[in-house]
Amino acid sequence: MDFVGNHILSVGQFDRSDVERIFQVADDMRPYAMRNRITRVLEGAIVSNMFFEPSTRTRVSFGSAFNLLGGEVRETTEVKASSLAKGESLYDTARVLSGYSDVIVMRHPEPHSVAEFAQASRVPVINGGDGPNEHPSQALLDLYTMRQEIAEQGRGVDGLSVALIGDLKYGRAVHSLCKLLGLFDDIRLHLISPPGLELPDDIVKAVQANGHEVHAFHELEPGIHGVDILYVTRTQEERFPSQAEADRYRGLFRLNQSIYTQHCEPNTVIMHPLPRDSREQAQELDDDLNTNPNLAIFRQTDNGVLVRMALFALVLDVVGEVDNHAQPVTWYTAKRHLSAKDRGVR
Ligand code: NCD
Image (cartoon, rainbow, N blue to C red; front, side, top):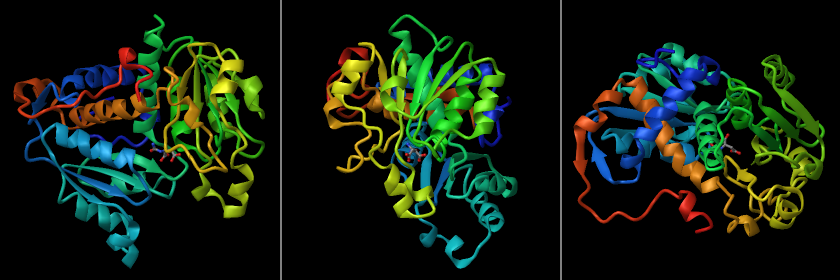
């Protein structure tokens, strides 16, 4: 696809070479994200970060990514703090905000709302999550992390086997990730969900139509055998018709060190889009995995900055200019990215 000036709304826009292009640009962003040097390539540019649903990582990492490229961030973090609460339409909000910014990142609880907003926007819009539908930047950073983790075993994404665990019905990160993985070759998916929270049929069919293997499970243990990656997710309780219904699913699948040791290969990678629900009744990813060197959750969050920098650089057409605006770092910089050699360090 042509990235310049275009919206990023769904992973369905990408083919394999687009994904590889994003990853290559993300790799080039590493020295800036690690504060080895800074760049001012987006000096004067403004991103509007419009988050009408709770967010920590996506909002702050999109903002940090833009700042790391030298740009400014404006943000609204709640519907009630914006004019949407006064009945303003997405159309009007988009017309207004696109007059204030060069690019907009938006998260909204309604499926396809970000696409509707983008139609009225005069500047590129990036989908930061539209209800249970899609979360393209999360899927990109997840796949980028998988590629990095598996490269340490001397392999690529082709031939990867991934167990997706938990709420596969409402989990937008999983929806986008399955579609992205489908662009590669010989993928095997183990879909582990409680009855009622299965991956939507259209996504399963699309993955199978591309010739990949899909196996469904309703129990954790049989599903986590023989895979390269465990991708654990939270019950998306905010999407359920009632809290009581969400509570029925809480804590059904809990991965901890003892289950991991018993059922997984010694180098099986553990991932989660986060937040993990650490409340007593949930704990889908136990704290006792924190020292497991294959726990990649904080490598995922670090990689989110690289991938989001890449998206901004591609959409705003500055990829070739980033290094021309580089400067040395003048302040004390702590060690940042957790790489292979830091594994197990908390
Ligand atoms: C995910 C989301 O918002 O869809 N979080 C995130 O952006 N990292 C997953 C979740 O909330 O469970």
